[in-house]
Length: 303
Length: 303
Image (spheres, rainbow over the protein chains, first blue to last red):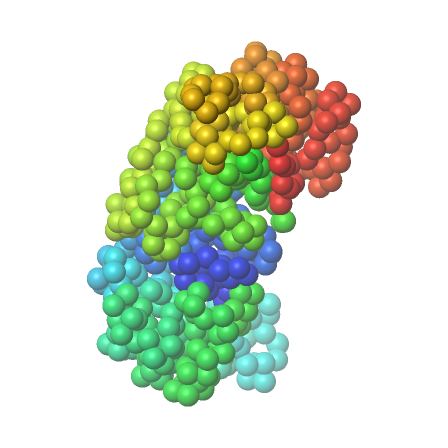
């Protein structure tokens, strides 16, 4: 099953030609989840062929504009496109008030229900669950309440191992085994345990999203061994005082967190507009954690 | 003195690749005024070299998202860029409530004052005035309260005619004449009336902005003889029933209004995303009013 992250934007707040603010799409199976929604995200979705009505839920980290000012327009577009299925929006308290105020003054009556989950940004707790995903909040430390998110696949069933299957099983029996059931012994044949004909269950894949945050080493414990970490890297380490003042991180700090958490891969993003070239951020990160990449717009990471 | 309109976007609500929602910049002298501010306007400003801190005032027609969802981000950027001069925002009631709510939940304390003028969208009345411009509201007819705007230059002084000036005037006397004053007779010379040495005063230039509106012929009286009219032309005339239902206009209706008002030039805009090619809208408009153009992004009209 697909478990894929697509970067739609990874700039920080100051608009920069050719860069766009934070937005990412996580695709699990054929279902899309949007993570942050900076201004212009709906045009990035057009460009990168992400269809708004395939979005099941939207996760907003915090209420600085470069992380959510594209949300209003996207909701309006979903309405214009005739969406009727409910949309789950997960974000800090206050987001619902802004959405309701906007809708009221615009005289906008959406054709679909918005179901809002207010996240406790101080807690590590499950904030969303469906048949594919369990999402937990991660308490970021920023100037205003801010949540990171850990997207964990639901446990997957082990695949049957063809070479372990006896001959003569009926399609119905095969289907039951594939569903994880055991076959009882009967007059025709002996019993068969699912565990004896299946491989090990695949480890659920996990993606951790950290934006925006002061470097907070204690968070490593919450995402230990994740397949992928996106960590904001607004500055180079030579500006770590500025990073601390503004509650942001440096590329080196992002890499230190990746290393401490023992994740498989690291994406760096949320680049300050002061960096015309981004390679120095990448180089700095790779010195600590070699399996690092820049979260450039259009990048697709399949896990 | 410059009196120039620059188009930053002229699409209607559905996002379309390569087109952007309504935003225009009127430049009078070195001062910029922004007219509507659809999502992404600050990136269009970057692209077309309009500097946010040169904006003196922003005029919003109505609270459909494609006309104001870029405003929040632009205000945040002005703040990040260190703006301290007050900013006048003119728009329908409710806009201030949205701005205040957003600022509160974002923990955003702008470094400059926002001075809000609530427009009575049913009235034709002066809503803004400075040393360059007088702006009046125009009562559009749309699904929600909506104002058009008439931007009229303040009366300009007549230029002195060099060939009418007697020899021997001192720089101080010339300056007084240029300011419109008469020179009294004294021992050295006879008096000199400003009117005798100056040409006719230039007619103040006027730009009328009509978006979004049902075709409303009665509005022609309010903009008679304007130098330039921008009129929304969401549809071709074959869709005039749809235009009426949604309180929009067709290209033919826009041109009829331009003709009835006796304006000099017409710009058509706010094109529905259904029109991949825009020439048919232009052709239809020109059949009624030949001096029509499409308000394409990047277009500059100097009056």
